[in-house]
Amino acid sequence: MVTQVMNCIMEDLQHLGGTLRREKLNGFAREILSSSWNTMHDQWQVITAYAALIAVTVWMLLGLWSLPQQQRSSVGRGRRKSSLAGPIRWPLLGAAPEVLWNYHRLNDWIVSYLKKSPTMHVQLPNVTFTYTALPENVEHILKNNFSNYPKGELFHEVMDIFLGDGIFNTDGELWRKQRKTASFEFASKVLREFSTLVFRDYSLKLAAILNRAAASTAAAVDMQDLFMRLTLDSICKISFGIEMGTLEPSLPDIPFAKAFETTNEIVSHRFMDPWWKLKRFFKVGTEATVVKSAKEVDDFTYNVIRTRRAELAAARRSGQKLQADAVTKDLLGRRDLFTRFLLLNEEAEEGAEMFTDKNLRDTILNFVIAGRDTTAVTLSWFVYMMIQHPEVAEKIEQELICTFEKSEKEDQSAAPVIMNSKKSDLDDDDDSKASDEASFNLRVAEYSQHLTYNSLLNLQYLYAAILETLRLYPAVPMDPKCVLNDDVFPDGTPVKKGNMVMYSAYAMGRMEYIWGSDACEFKPSRWLKDGVVQLESPFKFTAFQAGPRICLGKDSAMLQLRMVLAILCRFYKFQLVSQAPVKYRQMSILLVANGLHVTVTRKM
Ligand code: HEM
Image 1 (tube, protein in one colour):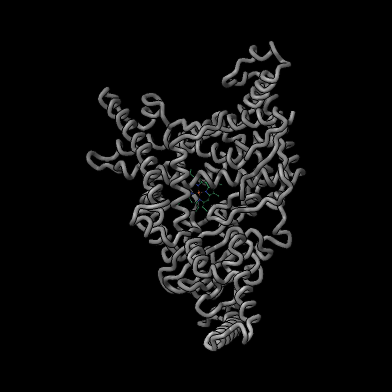
Image 2 (tube, rainbow, N blue to C red):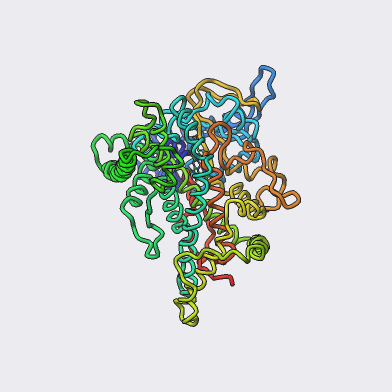
């Protein structure tokens, strides 16, 4: 979502520069060259053709001339001079032709330039993007001169129908207030405990689906689709307190989930659609669809708000004292974010309501949006890494066996809590496929009882492998910010008011000047010293952003990643269905293009 500003401009240019594609240029050239005096009756046509050829030649020469100019660019005033590599700037079009040509692999195209020079300007007809991979520049943008680099108006307008004035979509005071309240809630023990249970339950649902797929030899599954379902269900449970059910065994299409996806997709596409405002004005096409889907999302959300408010009002009428802990534990039995924010209202002074219905809707939906796709794609790339690096998968499995076999011996007296199954039911018919499946599910469920917030923290090698996945495949590959006022980066690069700056987490993970000569290799061991993870500066490892706007759900995401992967790595092995290389889709989120289709086998 965050790089959609960039996408928007690129797509504009795609329309503008469509005729510049190679085939068409070739066709054009052939037409001019093969034409003879005989076929070109009209002398004017000949003159025009020559004029066009001369214009193209001059234009190309000008472009080539502008390259060394650009590479000579420097800033004085006592700062270090910067020599920027970057694409050729053509008159009028700037770097657009090269950007368009490489659009499907934009992240890697950026890598190729930032390898040569850690900062570069990409000049487009209407705006210049300054890309950087230098940690000191990133720290400058995200922290030291934070107020000069907001998300900006364009982002807000495009996302308004979906994100409203939620934390993800605001700057300044509006953002600051939400950040403060939300940080407090995210740090709470109640939410952490609730999340641990939710993540465990949904991991078991996923494990059961994989178990079934493993039992049927021909069945392949799309792990990315399953992870999207898992993260939607779990984040809706944590945020709304509601069972969404997309991860039920039949993998159903749920109306809210569908409406949510449709709205997300269309709003994201707006950044690439130069006509979206016109379509919105005439209420046609995707803009007509998004009005309906957004309304469906709103209806659902406001309905939950009304229900929760009614529950609280009933509790108030019954005369109970509304202390947060008492209400969540005893009165409502709810620990979801919705209820917790409503309780903050209750605790606020008389008449000083902190959250209107619209505030609540925006707040909660922003969490769902921020946390869902990011976690799902990280899980997908992790599974892909395990397929590519079986030696790492093996080490993780060993760590899991060691950690939990040990704790099992210690815990022998404590009978594990078994969910949704009775052991005696299974003993009768061991041979049947169904009972085989059920007994495997039971085994996974028993094992999962060891997975607590604290025990998961002991899995240092797994943690290192997750960090390594995020280093090479950051869910948000690049992050654009607006420039409010002229500024100069610490490396001496000037940036101009009204332009955009962009740090590329994807490129940063691949830079030898940051990570050493093995930067592009997947090596979890780089994070470990004496078996313990050593964290890097968030301005160097930028997968969660850094500074005042660092991802608010980072710890929650890590908890879910550890929980899901501790189960998958212990009990399942994956194999790609196709030999075709796995690629990303060029979007704001680093999706696996066309899904991650695998076959599954169980580990005993
Ligand atoms: C692997 C998983 C995740 C990754 C890689 C990730 C990454 C990020 C990044 C890069 C940003 C900055 C985006 C921007 O400002 O343009 C961000 C912001 C945010 N994330 Fe995450 N995120 C993840 C999971 C989550 C989860 C699970 C939640 C919530 C439950 C969450 C909540 C948020 C929120 C609320 C913000 C906005 C913070 C602010 O603007 O102050 N994230 N995340």
